[in-house]
Length: 203
Image (cartoon, rainbow, N blue to C red):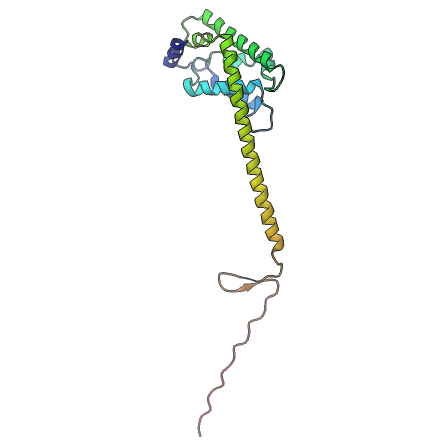
């Protein structure tokens, strides 16, 4: 297993054949991301796993994986919610089918590092990994939703406070501008300046 992963790391991606990034894009469009209103499904686990692999290997060794996850029977498994009673069975079935995908590619092209690395992970081991990633997905989703709720609560509180302040502001209150002039609903004329009488002259 480790040799297969090392060989995969040394290999080069094949544009047009390797498309792990395309798979991630498809998954996010179909199943959403952490914190949104969509229920988390097995497809989210696939997307998170693919994202982790992309962080290490990029698109290397992902021959045909985007097409594999576009098959109707695979999409049906990915559509199973994480809290569904049928999740365990769907998770196991998906792991077995993906292992078969990589085995078939490895038999057809024994020198290809991607299929060799994929086939090195048994269905049982893939099932174990998927269940662990499912726990991560649920935790990320919960934390993201809590952050969103806190942000909404802060915004709502600030908006309510602003509205309350506006309501308490007297409509006829006079304010002073930077130029020192008074503004308000009723402007008073300036007071006349007292005139000092001229001193009388002696005659």
